[in-house]
Length: 140
Image (tube, rainbow, N blue to C red; front, side):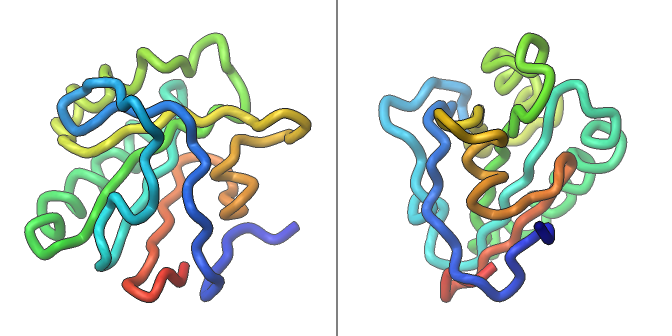
């Protein structure tokens, strides 16, 4: 299977567990439309991933600082494809605060019968760190 879905239609998000930009758990899952109608950037990470902390989160900070005011929507998703005992839901708020990112954070686990978390299955992301950009026409 090839990684990524360049130029394909973006699927709606199936990530069940989220915190909002202030760290409060969301009662209903975030939808792709909740990130706006312009460009959307989704960052996939795992708390234990060294590259996520040395490269991914700093890049996300720069993108967010420069593009959020221009209408670009952002979200981060912890795609737990390994290390479920370490890459836990509580790490969302820790990373949100550590990197001063007032954006929604999701915690994604494999759906029943799936090997990978829902975002990885739907978007063919190739691990972490991983960025996905969706245009205003909902194309990856």
